[in-house]
Image (cartoon, rainbow, N blue to C red):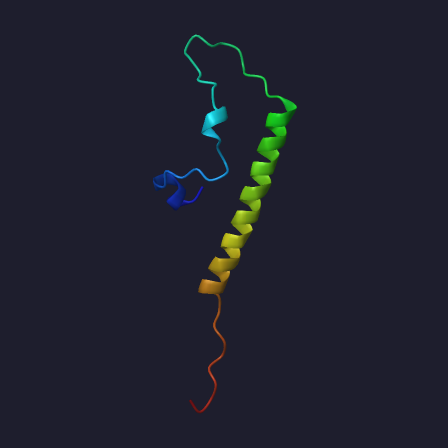
Length: 74
């Protein structure tokens, strides 16, 4: 998780609030069962986060990477 994600109310494509109707209560003792569609959605979300992570790493390497050697005479 990025620091920006903690302070940003925008959840992006990671959470669909209209489909989130499973509020856990204290009385609930059983585990919730995931459907194949939910598992597939979790896999896609994980793949998307992985892609975003590597894009972020590329930007960080470009920003903080080694600079070109200085040219003599300048």
